[in-house]
Image 1 (spheres, rainbow, N blue to C red):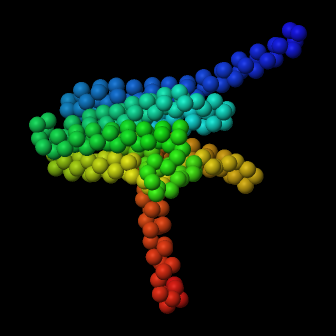
Image 2 (cartoon, rainbow, N blue to C red):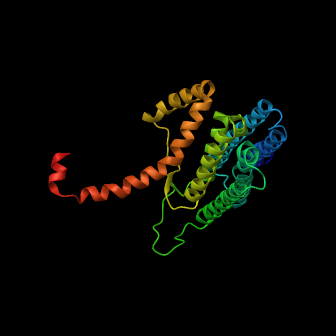
Image 3 (cartoon, helix red, strand yellow):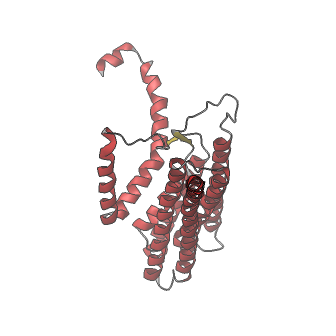
Length: 292
């Protein structure tokens, strides 16, 4: 009897232990967001007196957000692979995303650009703070909408087509935060160190980007989720691609992270424009098709 019951207890304990793994990745995600906020605060304290020291802290904060994206990707993948996804895990992951990809990039961009380059009582500073707040609100709304679609996958608005799991509805907040972090990682020196004129110009560009990211998050554009990617005989080359990307990431992280994050953010817009333009071409006169 003891020999028959022992394996059952072992399997039960192993199953319970598997539930801890996705939670551990989510906890690591929260830890990276926490460190990113602390590094941003520390950098803002010395941004005017020691800009070179501040740039180091800004870079640490940007790297922490990048690592958080990795942990956020792994917790979902591991939960699906081990079949340990729970509703509690979904809510816990969303709360972690609000901190790491909502508050942390706001603190980073404010300390790196808006707060360091614009006078506190100026209208431009107030506009920058407002846009950062709207970015946070759009990200929180995006996460809330995702949770509803994940737990109750049904049409929310009458007449809106239901999308499959291969796509996200709207830009996910991790890639949005990843693009902001990649920009800081590419140029970690505070914008105030470029001179008053260039600093204002760069800050205004960042404010435009923040507004665009907020709009994309609450939009209905389709973004690939890559959840249907499977490793087969022909997909084994994916391992070589990942290895090459890992080496390039180590050697040229500033350029590669900026390119990858920019391409992901832009591909939803490009795909929308492509699907909008192509039907018009199919209805074009016959002689246009002959010329092409």
